[in-house]
Image 1 (cartoon, rainbow, N blue to C red):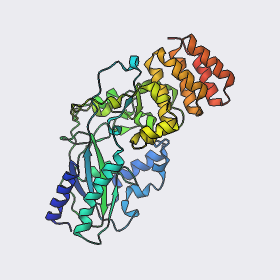
Image 2: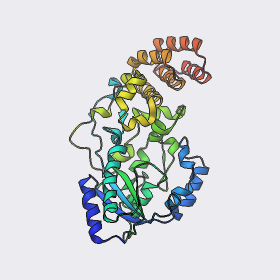
Image 3: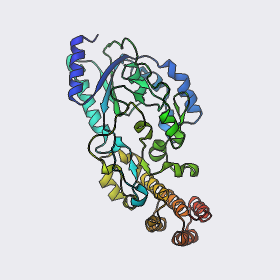
Image 4: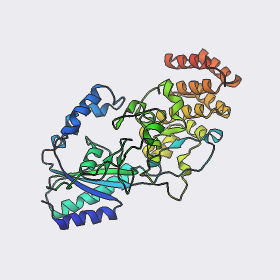
Length: 373
C-alpha cells in the first residue's frame, strides 16, 4: 500500500518534471467502456487505425498485458495553445499545424519525465514493477485519467479540467503497488455549451459526447492513409497536421501565451516541395513525422486548393508533373481543378495524357470538369 509520504514524493517529483496534475486509480476491467468500444470497432470507426482493433480486450483490462499490475498513476503534462499571427492565410498560402506538434516530439520529453516519476516508485519499493506509457501501448489514457480524478470527458471528447482546460498530454504508469483511487470523480462542467459541436467544420462531433473519427480533421491529416474523401477536402481549410478548433473554442481553455507561433503557419509551397531528405531534416524530431512525407504533402496540396489563390498553380503543376507518389499527384490535380484558370487547365490536360495511375487519372478528369472560379 502506498504511504502518504510516497504520495507526496511522487507529486513533488512530478511537479519538478513539468506535470500539472497527478492522479491514482486501481486497475480493473473497464466494463463501462467494453460494449461501446467493441461496437465502435465493429462499425469501422477506427478507419485506418488498424492497431486499435488488435487485441482490443487488452485495452479493456490492462491486467491482460501483465497480471501483476494493480494500480495506475495518471499524469498530465500541459502545453501552450498556439497564438498565431493574424494573417490572411489564403493570400500568403499558409497552412496550419496543431499546437501540440510545435517544437520537439512530445513522446520523447513527456516519456522521459514520466519515467523519472516511475523511478520514485521503484526506488521506494525495490522489486516493484512499473511500466510507463505516453500515447503508446494498449491504454485508454483518457478513461484512466478520468478515473484518477484528473478531469471529465467534454463534448469535444477531450479530457477537460477547470484549471488546465484540455491542453495537456497524458502519461500513465502501471504498477503492482496498491494505490487508492480518488474519493470521487471529477463532475461534468460542459453544461449546455455546444461550441465545439457547432463549430467543427466537418461535423465530426456527435450528440452524446461522441466523435466520428473518420470525419475528424486530426484523423484525416495524420492517421488516414490514401485519399481524403472529396466531400471533406474543402472543409479541412488550412489544416495540414491536426486541428485545434474544438480546443480553441472551449471556454475552459485560456488564450494562447504571449509568444506568437509562426511555426504553426508553414508556407505551403515550401512544404509541397519537400523531398525525402528535406522532410526528414525538418521533422525527424517532431510529432509531424507521424503523417510521413506522403501524408503531409497530400495535406499541403489540399490546403493550397483551399486558398483559392492561383499563385499556387505553378507549385501544384510542378508536383503533378514530377511527384512519384500517386496520392500526392491526385490531390494536386484536385487542387488545380478547384483553383481553375487557363494555366491549371493546360497542366491537367498534359498530365492526363501521361498519367498511368487510374486513381490519379480519375482525379484529373474530375478536376477538368470543375467549374472555373
